Length: 346
Ligand code: FES
Ligand SMILES: [Fe+2]
Image (cartoon, rainbow, N blue to C red):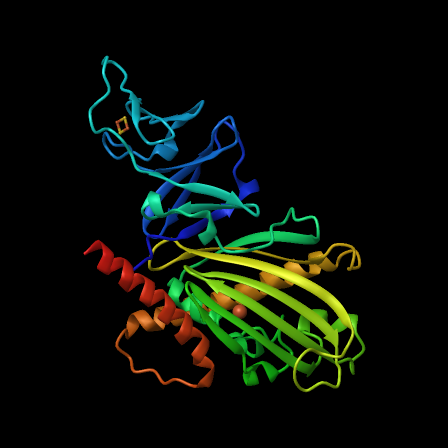
């Protein structure tokens, strides 16, 4: 089940050029969509299915603002209306394909899958794009063959960093003892927590003396369907046991992550990581995104394995523990919105 009235990330803006063959094929929340840019640069998103005989429009040809199906040549405008049927003077009544609202924001392309009248830009998650003047960021993308609810559970419970990511972000079991301050919002969950007095993460251990210790601060804004926006700061280990670290700020980083369900069994995962411009040494931003990528392959491995086991025994009785509260809260928000949407449709 997918929320219809939500913005779904279709990728990074620089992934869609104005090239003659630049037709981006996406599966979003169970629907096939083709995206392209008009000569003005504006992005169009249409159902990737010709109204005539369902040939993919993504096998078609861009013609100015329009897209022509290259099976029998029907042509569709950016609003989805058929504007030409070759060989006959009049277009066919009712010959339209669905067109989706699109907004580019912070270098991401967002597609609204629900009622166009409700497509408010306000509902696009807050993020920091790779062209932001204050942040030096790198972007990437992976595919994961799992259900997006498992991605939600993964991202709202970072205790897994200690175990899944022992070779990248981890290097301490302190993550298992996280007690995040959690605030449920109308469309998501905010989390804030400190991990104190820990060694450098595995990927950065070689940069510091063995005995170096750090305080780590995580501030996460999570919104439906599965957007994880993280402000992450590293301090030298201070003495404070509560509240802000009294250590020295070493690194101020930002990561924007959007997980888009293709269907019930796979997701596209678009993410960035980087730090404040001018505050890092050459090569450090590259190290961050390389490590991020390696870590997400670790997540992919465990989430794909977990999904397989869950499909084998969907009614298996699982046990909970205290770190399941983040996932439970976020999935509660999602389910509440899904229920409200179903009731409104009914
Ligand atoms: S299937 Fe598109 S024109 Fe026939
Ligand atoms: Fe992870």
